Image (tube, rainbow, N blue to C red; front, side):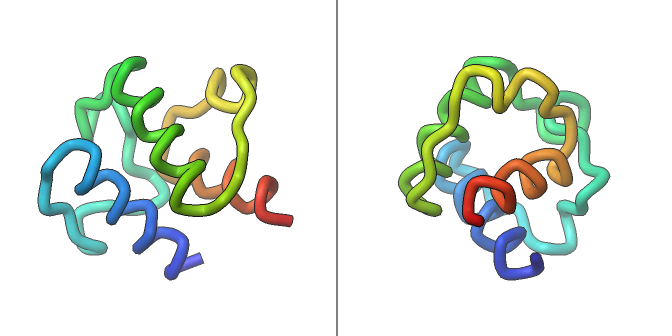
Amino acid sequence: MNNTLERLIKVFNAVFETSLTINDVSADTNLREDLSINSIGLLYVAMALEEEFSVKFTNDDFKEIITVGNVLDCLEKKMK
């Protein structure tokens, strides 16, 4: 999962032009409160994740996404 987290951080940095590191983000990191990602930002993240991980998301996939851990869980399910 650590490699997936590193790739996810890479996506966040590319989409939002930030310089987050593995020390800045954990599974408990809240997307809205800790990373200031709103619903539009989450849409951009989803599109970038589809490209990075060669997966496809549905509208329902991101309805319950609150934390980085939720994103990682969703990605793991999609990559199986």
